[in-house]
Length: 95
Image (tube, rainbow, N blue to C red; front, top):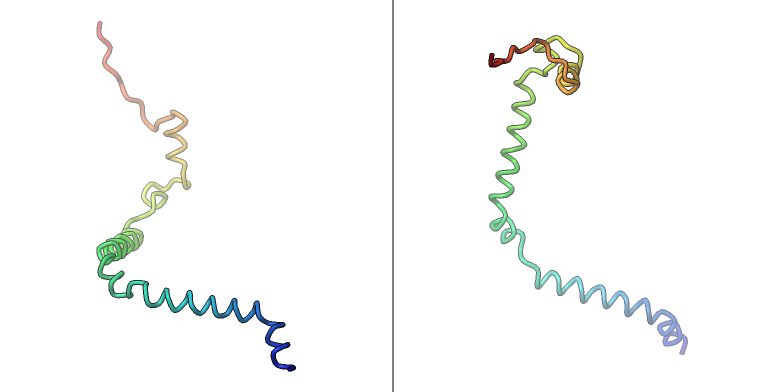
């Protein structure tokens, strides 16, 4: 009689484990296979990989803006936003 009393003491634990086992096994049987998902999404995976490669290539080959102009970082952009261009542009005024 000691064993049934111990089993009843852990009845909720046993039911929880059984429920988790049933859920996991049903997901394994019902869920699509990995290759099915890969076959559906391969264009997305490929385009994302090509985009990341292009970002890396352009990041390595192009000069940063500070090296090309010799300015401090962001100085040219701040001058543009502040309305102080490097050169003045003459506009046509009708007489």
